[in-house]
Image (cartoon, rainbow over all chains, first blue to last red; front, side):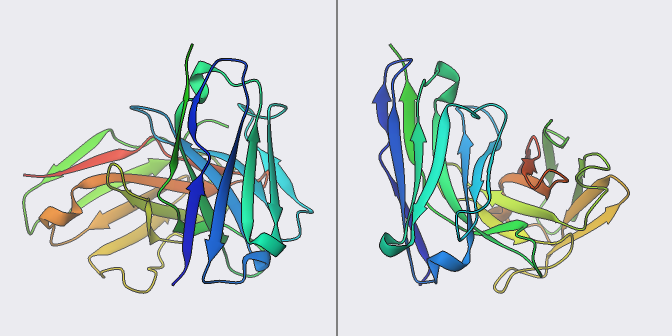
Length: 122
Length: 110
C-alpha cells in the first residue's frame, strides 16, 4: 500500500524555524516528483514547493521562496521541508503529495499524507 | 500566481446532478489539459477525483466527470450522495512548472 506520513509540525514563534519530514512507502520514491501543499485555517489548498526525483528540479511558491527549502533523501525514502523565518501566515496543515503524470510532465497529485500542523504564534 | 476561481458553495438533493466551475487563464487551465480535481473532507487527506481534465483514477465512481472549455474547467457529480458532501478543489499545472489550486467549492447535500 502506498503511504505518506508527515511529521515535524508544532508550535514555533515568528522568525523561528521548523523542519518537516514525509516518510514514503509502498512505491519507488526516487522515481517521482514530490510536492508540499498547505492549508491555512479557513483557507483553501496552496501549493508550496516541488522537487523532482533526482532533486535536479526544484520550484517554490512566491510566498515561501527564500525562506523554505525542499529536499529529499532517496536512501531514506523521505521528503523534507526546512522552514525558516516563519511568519504568522505560515500557520497551516502541511501535506506532502506524490506527483504523477503522463509522459514527461508531473501534473497531478495522486497520493497524499494526512498532514502535520504548523502553528506560528508568539 | 493567483488562485483559480471556483464558486464558494454548491448544493443539491440526493440523486440530483451538480456542476461547478474552475476558471483560470491561458497560462494554466486554458493552456494545458492538466486540470485535476480533489475531494477534501476536513481533517483528512485530499483525494484525487479527476486528472488531466476528464480521467478518473481507479476506484473513483463514474458519477464524477470532468470537462474543460477554454480557460474554464468543470466537475460534474451525478446521482449526488450524502458521502459526496465535502470541499472540492481544482488544480492546474502551469507554464512556470508550478501548480495552482482553486479557491475551493463546498458541496452540500440537502
